[in-house]
Length: 370
Image 1 (cartoon, one colour):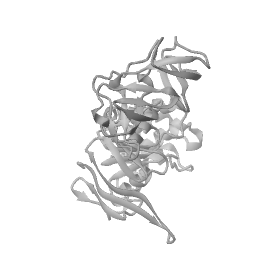
Image 2 (tube, rainbow, N blue to C red):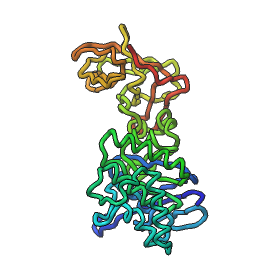
Image 3 (spheres, rainbow, N blue to C red):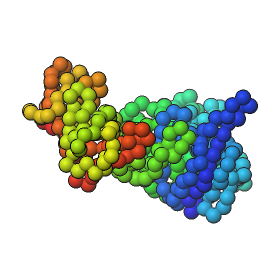
Image 4 (cartoon, one colour):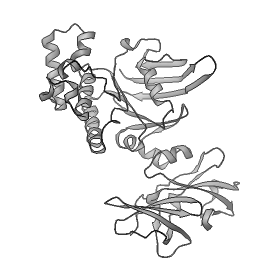
C-alpha cells in the first residue's frame, strides 16, 4: 500500500424522521508509513471516519483509496487492514496465543506450526511471551492491550486503524504504552490512523494531526503547525494544554480593550484593520507574571505540578491561566500584574472564528516567569 486517500467522504445516518451528517465532505491523504492522528471532541466524526476506512460503515458519498485501488465498496474482510479497539475485543475463552493467532487461522491457510512461530515472534516483540498460555481475565489492562496489538501486528496488514486504544488505561501506563506504540509503528513502518479525543496524546504521537469538529475537517498538519498556526479559534482552543486563554476585545487605533480593564496596544495592527471587535488568544506559557504591568488579574487557585505551577486568575469575568515556575506561587486573592509579547498573540474574527494573526517565529514558547 502506498497510502490512504479519502476524497469528499460523507457519511449520513438516516433514521427516516431525520438525517444526521456524521462526516461531511472530508478529503484527506495519509502517506505510506505515516502515523496520522484524528482528534476532536466526542461526536465530531473521527470514529465514524475510521469505521468507513475499515469498511465497517457504508460511505454515503465520496471515495476511499488504498494506494491506487479504490476500495469504497469493498467489505471489511477485503481490505488489508487491522483494527485495534478501545475495549480490546479479546475472546475470553481463548488463551493469549489463541487470541493473537485467531485472525491468521481464519484468513490464511498457514499450518498451525507456522502460525505459532509468528505468534511467538510477535509476543517476543511485545514482551508478553510468558503470558501466551493465560486467559484475558488473568491479564492487566496493559497486558490485554498488548495482546490486542499483537493480534493486529501478526497479520502484517498494510494499515493499522486504532480507535482510542489507550483510553481504558491509567495515566502512567497510558504514557508508557504511548511511547511503545510510537516505537512499534516506526519499526514496522505501517501506515497508521489513530483516533483519540485527547489532544495531548495527539500532539505527542502524530506525524500529522487532523482536527475534526461537527463532522468537518478543520485543519491537518504537523503538531507544531497546528499549535502555532491554527486556522481558526476552534483549533487554537482544542490544541494545547492548558487551553489557550481567549477573551473578547474592542479595537480602536490598534489598541485592544477587554474585560477587567484589559488593554493592549499592538505595534503592528495590520491584521485587524477594519475590525471593531476581535477575539484575543494568549497561551498560558506566554503569560509572564511581573512586578509592574499595565494589566492585572486576581488569583483564584494555584495548582502545583512539580516542575511548574498553573496559576488560574480572573480578568473581569474571564478566567485566564498562566504557567509559572514552581518557586512562584501567589496567594488566592492576590492582584498580579502580567504581560505577554506581541509575537505570541493570536487574533480571531469574532463572527467566523477565522485566524487573523497567529504566533510568529519570534515567539519562543518559554515565557514561564519566576
